[in-house]
Image (tube, rainbow, N blue to C red):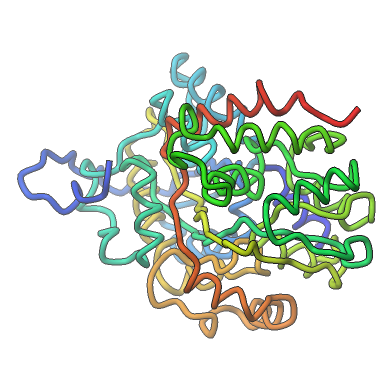
Length: 393
């Protein structure tokens, strides 16, 4: 069960319009008279957090859903696949569980169905249910998806204390350590790795770049830093799972991380429990989230069920299961879902493998949102072209 869960995780406009009166809205389609089957694709590991809630919906509403088919896909590949299906009129995906990567690419390609204000009457009011920073992350979706889990992520420094005797707490010290220990520092390709994206988007703040929100003209220090760091890195894995396996095996000694990717691999035994995490002296937080998105072209009877399912997934009882085993710590996006509501197994894992200072850091560190969709797509593409080719010889 542990290995199955780990592999599943490693495959990796503002909402104000919803509250406006006088905005044209599409009527939500009627629920079907007989149950439908649904196809859900996960490109972010979201099912690891939410599968119990989906199972609960299937059990509680058999009159609406007969079966849910789950599949996985790499985030970089899905938007193109969906666009091709839509162009051919052969859509076979009803919902996508996605991080900000595929969500951004899909927004740029126009493949997601707008939810607000179109179906505001059939969905919860985001400003009423989300916790404050999660509500800001909901704005990232530009009304084309609903946030299902939330993580005030990092970046943080994860390291093996047996191999790292002097722990860096500044970007300069991190680079110096990597140069002194070639091929021992590692991170994955940001387009398919949450911790790598958070690291990339956090660097402009940590380095004091001229405009952390502008990867085109405001990231001179960041692009130069990542290029220099790349000279010490043997290769960039395609996903975070490989990073954690190599850290756990002792092949690598240090990686940028985020709260959940510290807790969960240690809980699963992929990374030794003795592995430590350090903050930066000028610690900041870049938030992360995962979303439920609906492709354009879905059949009306299925859309009706999907809208109902989205409501169900955002109820506090279903959000409580997203504490999981710390994978996206804390997990719940909606307000008033304390750890005490989570399953006992989740509470036990976080008590054993969580770090008490995480909650204090989350409460006190300056918190920033990720780049907007267009800028994130640009940054990921530039990283691939400019940084991904730089490795240690």
